[in-house]
Each structure stands twice: as structure tokens, then as C-alpha cells.
Length: 110
Length: 115
Image 1 (cartoon, each protein chain N blue to C red):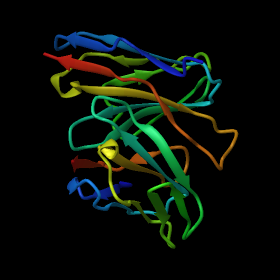
Image 2 (tube, rainbow over the protein chains, first blue to last red):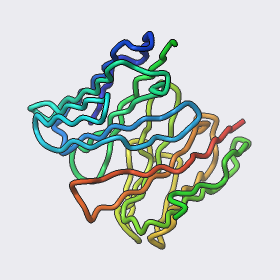
Image 3 (cartoon, chains in turn yellow, blue):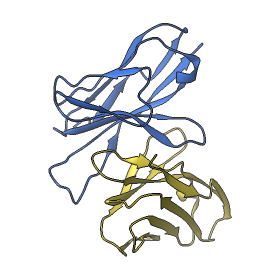
Image 4 (cartoon, rainbow over the protein chains, first blue to last red):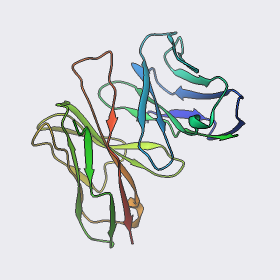
């Protein structure tokens, strides 16, 4: 079936280090969304990418959508303790279904 | 606006019992969905609806029923609870009128334990 794979599963960083999580789909996606979930909380929307090769920035966060619209990445520059949480990618392979990746849990040590 | 609300927050069931998880949104969103979240497996789509009277199956629909009689409400029914249904359940909604921006708004979740 349609799958959205996300790596790594966990990442431990020292505060100030950079962090990247990668998302890969077995099929072409019409769009990809990124969410952040704090421990004990619910997913919160960060951004949506629609166009092939699209790059968007939100302060220290940079999001990319691959040329083939099958992969995406989220890069955080100079992590802070407030970045702690699980980052999910979610894609629409077609129709109305949105498929989530398993998430990357980020731990930041002060 | 309250956004997306879910009740109850916590529930303990015995195997074989049935129950309904409630979800409501006050944003007039067409699209609503139910996900379950298990450790290390992300969010898996159970059922979704693109409007009142229209529902469809997601990735893991077995053991669950849904209905959408109004735009606001999208209840999830567990017909005969099993320990494998122990999970955190999230309801989400989004507007389909703007295809460029399909932000999904999530409710706070229902934590379900089936003994």
C-alpha cells in the first residue's frame, strides 16, 4: 500500500546543533505537510509544500519538497530546547487520504 | 472558536464493550478524520469524511464505524473493544475550499485503554 517513511526515528542533539528529518513516499504526492507534536500534546500544523522543488523557511526551520514530489525534509538550524517534540510529515498520495510518517522524535540537551 | 473538541479525554473499557468517541468542530470544515497513534507508528488514518453524509475508510478501519450526519460532528464507534485498540485517538478537521492550504486542526485526543 501507500507508505510514507520517515527517518531517523530518534535524534539526540546538543542545544545549538542542527537537526534534519527526512520523509520519503513510495508514490508521488500532491502535497506534503509537516506537523510538530509536543510530548503529551496533539499535532500542530507547521507548513504545507505543494510545488516540485519548493523550499520554504520559517525562522530557523527550512522545509524542502523534492523535484519528483516523493521526498521532503525539515532542517532546524541551531536547535533550542523549545524545539523538543516529534516532527511528522504527512502526504496526500491522491484523493482525500492523508498518510502520516512515523515521526522523528527530537531530544535537545541544554 | 473552540476549534476541535473531543470527549472523553480518558476511557477504560473491558474487552467486548462498545463505546463512542465524540468529535466536534466549530470551524465549518468539510473534511474530518480520525487517527490512532501508537508508539513508534505515527498517526494512522481510521476513517474520514469529506462532508455531511459522506464517509470512507482509511488505513486501519476494522473494528470502527463512523457517521457524519452534520458538518460539525464526526463520532467514532468501537463496536466490540479489543486490547489491540488501546491507543490515543485524534480527530482532525480541515477546510477543502482552499486547495492550496489544507491545514489539519487536531483535537486534544482521547486516551483509550482496553483491558
